[in-house]
Image (cartoon, rainbow, N blue to C red; front, top):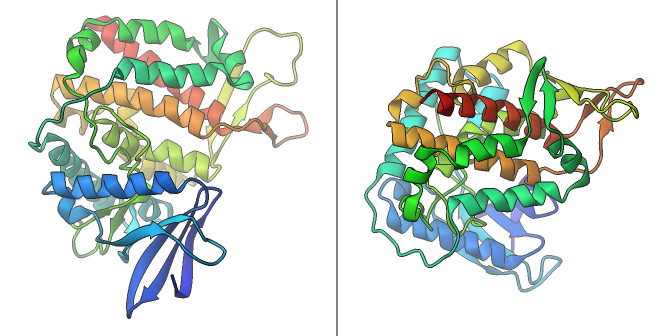
Length: 366
């Protein structure tokens, strides 16, 4: 595999992603540093999505080739090559402040409605030969959290104070949600679960070639092939997760607490602070806050009651997965007193508690 004058997009422990010219055409190469089988699963999923959806058939860039690299420093690593889409991701449009509030709202509105069309598309119902269900998926992530020492110490507390409000622990809220009439009715017999889905409509995976000319044209990359089964609304939950994902990825937050330096106190009190610029913060919040506060429900009101509940369950699952995926043992202390720190998994954990309290309060009212 020969390439010319590359532009690197990402080089992490897992993947090396870059753009290069081949036959006078720019293409994107994705190489898996570790497990080649996972990348091949991603290729299979991309092909399934293209074949199963008329909308995604036009939204996913063309796959040119895939397989194992035979020679060189990347020998025996899995790779695939897709068409290069020139443009900006939804995340870049916000972070780089590339458009007005009004245009961003239009982009968000159209994109969200298009995602709903994808999920509501009539497709052939596949037989699910699995013992997994949405409840088991939640408990799988929960068990992972309990095995991580730092997180377990927070998990074990009966009550926690976050941003001057008191919260119960995860178990308290999950018992209410998973034993609710709505949950038992909606997820009975795995009716809404599927083994085909993109599962990853995160803002960094949505590319717009030209937002000033046509906001309706966008492309989707990087599906999450680790899910064998899930509710299709998980894909939109990942879109909703964009604000939180971008905040931790860019370290635009910090937490204040005596949790680590007060050896006597048994009370856990945390304060969180987002440090995006006011303009960027407002753009993120204008588009995503309603999914966590359930106020000003412009997008949620596009869903029926069944879909609203499913999306909230998927946001819950998405946050649990986010805690585990972003887990780091290190606590980054950023002041001399040892009370101001950064830790991605703890920040998501605290965000999850806020979400669960709002979700369970809504359940209790019905």
